[in-house]
Length: 317
Image 1 (tube, rainbow, N blue to C red):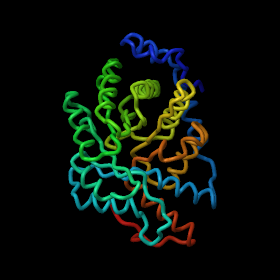
Image 2 (cartoon, one colour):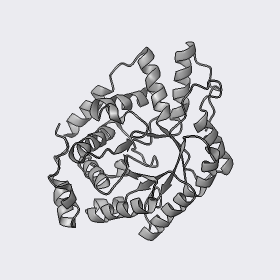
Image 3 (tube, rainbow, N blue to C red):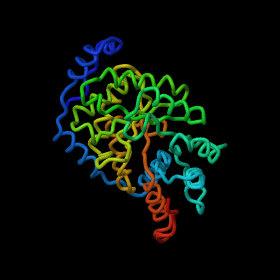
Image 4 (tube, one colour):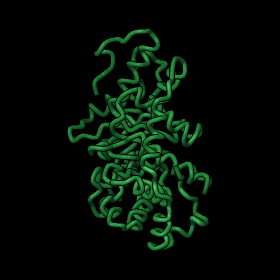
């Protein structure tokens, strides 16, 4: 399966709409059958005993514990913050999650909830999840979150512009959001389920990286098809090739639909076998999830005691 072709001079790629289009459509086409077969084969790797325990703890440390509902309340965000800091109240050795992810109006509450810890506060922005708003509205969304203390911004691209072939508009919006984010790290969400083809996911990955994304992210979790092993593998290939070309490392965040420890471990194998050990750290790989943490904690307890503690062992988010 071909990898993304390195560009001879990436500084020239975004000089104009035509140069960007030429570069993106010059990337090797994705062999869909080969991609899916590779992802499936990596998912069959058997991870046992101490390696499994290590993988579970690593996965917990990579979670962006997320609540993005219209019914979110300060109390719910504070409770989720407490869970991010101390996922298992009966076992203080359980690692903290990487971040707590909320809407911009809940950032201040989330920031107070995790104060004094290394848990980051991430906020979705840019008219999440549809991204259908004027640029100034999107930038206002970002500035509100950053002013409230967000450490990370998760933005959505304009999928309509991308699918219409207006790649430069997508690129320039990401650049503008990156500038508005200041010191906050920027995760760029493609909504892969709406991009239709693997070739489009590869092109979107390169647009995001060329525009200054710190992370590229599969999805919002709000559509029918979210993170899959295949689309995550494709994005990992892109960040691997981008670093080989530029020396710049970019993170990857699959989000939506990853609910079990078995699924999480499969994704970690894909990370290790595709991008390498440098990405096996929560600075470079995250899971966007809510229910995943509960299953990881139950499996962790099973490894430690030899039995499950029952359905009431973990909190219901």
